[in-house]
Length: 507
Image 1 (cartoon, rainbow, N blue to C red):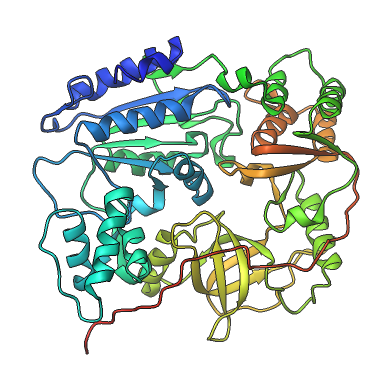
Image 2 (tube, one colour; image 1 turned 180 degrees about the vertical axis):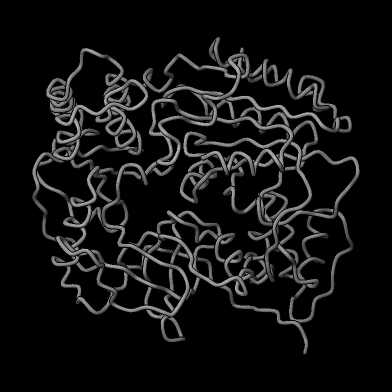
């Protein structure tokens, strides 16, 4: 790890050393690259906290690399080889598909918490392929799968270490590889959890049951889970277990979005002061836009972020109206948000399958059209590794000043969806988009109410979360106006590798 330490700031290096010390006590020596059997009965939980741009992701990525070089096996949820007595494991987790995909785009093999809590059951034919790819079995002979296809799969795996990716290279879908899901019973070793500010107490307890060694990475300036009374799970840890990153690295690159986010920590800055800062940044840098209206084209892939539910509903209905969407049907390309899965106990296996494939509460999806069965929808799950699913759907379109939502179509049971053209800032945590539109009149309303959360004005926490969702450009929308679309809704930008070959078990 010595070759990476010069890239660290002092607080990152200190955090790295403290974590390495804790892992050494668990039998994982990063300095010498050696592994020893785990010690039973010991629970270690640490937290790395810092504001946006403080280097949490860099630290997580470097620790992941060091553990991989030491021989720790990465458990990603796509495939786990046969258990070995001497193996040590690491899982990098995020609460949402989008948060996991952000890490994967940065080279970190992250997956969702659901994907680790539930383990897959594999088809025996596919298992032969996976064991061979992992170096634990002989080259398989599979009817319908050519030697050339196996060679493509092997070549892919040597570079990317992804079983579903290798299967896709061979002409197979990763979803064909998994026949069902079950609750994980066997513990793992180490869990890195990103966006830990989103964890509630129950999720935290579930993770502690599986991981004797947990490292949480979180931002204390974000919003706490709604049911947590303004507190985050890492705030309850003893002080020596909390490692704070103070330096803001991304500010070194003169990032105007982060400059605005961190200006919110100044207690002297009121809402009007902050808006003047936004306007000033917008005049000098096009990465910040002082917007007089909501751009409807952006809403199809990145929702407008609002505080009030009434604002969300009005914007959604305006979005549908300008696209000419009928009240009794969805248009292909409309964005949706999964609001949960309503299935009876006897369909638990199907529920686990959908959740493990990314269709969890809060998942962002794009409607692709009706399924082959009545009440079913074809959906593209944003950020999921295998994004296209077909699910029984209950779609709810909420109306202004109406207590009950309008339901254009519904199965008797299945996944429930709300429209996703606008979302509350609370539900946006863990997600990032290239362009983010923040509806400023809502934040002004929050500032006028004078509410506080964990000692800070609520509007500042809302603004901080909303602003830091933007990867490249922030649109600060100051008027309740909506632009006209430049074209119809589309789905051709949702590219998925074709699956020309499918293997089915013999009857």
